[in-house]
Length: 351
Image (cartoon, rainbow, N blue to C red; front, top):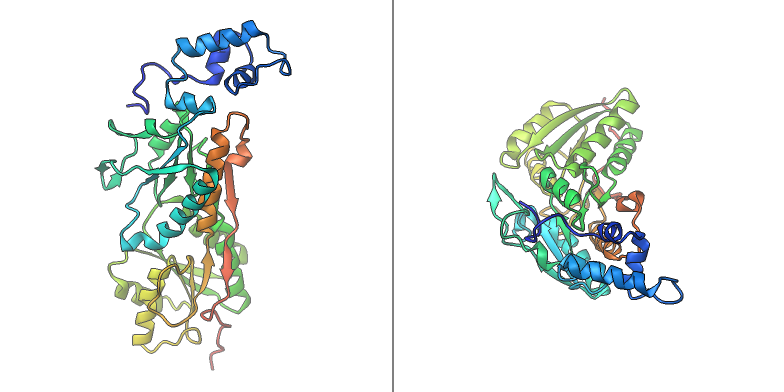
């Protein structure tokens, strides 16, 4: 199953250049109406390029119209998880805000692709009735994405950008440096005397989750005398998560999300555990909705709104036939901020 309903391989500027026997730059100049005396492209060459474009129906295809500089000015937005339930509001709201702001700046409309079927609990972008032919390119969001679909998009040359780092080769993305941010928070706690950590994390295998874990493990290993309890959690039994943290003897609790931190802080209050005197708490995510707690969490703040706006601008550069996006430009990580809240304190000396 392919992205386009048109038969045969996707027609590209490079393929047109091969058919005509000219450079790809010449094809680009013709498509952009710049085959004039200044470019020194003979009229016969220009006419032959235009003839091949007509013969291959290149301009009739939405992707071709984009490359010819007359695209639909519509960007697709696809989320591998539902974007609007309360449970995912913290994750998606700032991303959608960034996309909207950048699209407005570019003069583009947005098309939210919602007809995707759910297979094995996950939405599928590349299904028989997909609407990718209506858009110039697509922005992909989700904690976990389908690697096979990403690889197919790359293979077929469909323009897209993933929001968040992706392992799949050739996938353009703008992501957050969770490795560096997590490591920095561990270093700060270590400098305050802490040596025993407990990390309550989601069971997801998404890159952003794994990057946090990588930052934690690499820093713990580098420090030498620190230890960490890894506690996977699906969020359904915070009581068991809390018991595991307390039984570990950890003096620093690292929570994957603010929601996890909220649940465990409720248990701390119920058990009379003072934060941060008895237990320091760090969250590896930002507060975007009202927290149940009246404490300012020490936390990692991924620049989600900026990630999304930068990803949208990157997609625009990919769609621009006059701009060649380098591999470095196509895979970018942005620094996370750290909020020095009120939940990380020096290790209290034991009598």
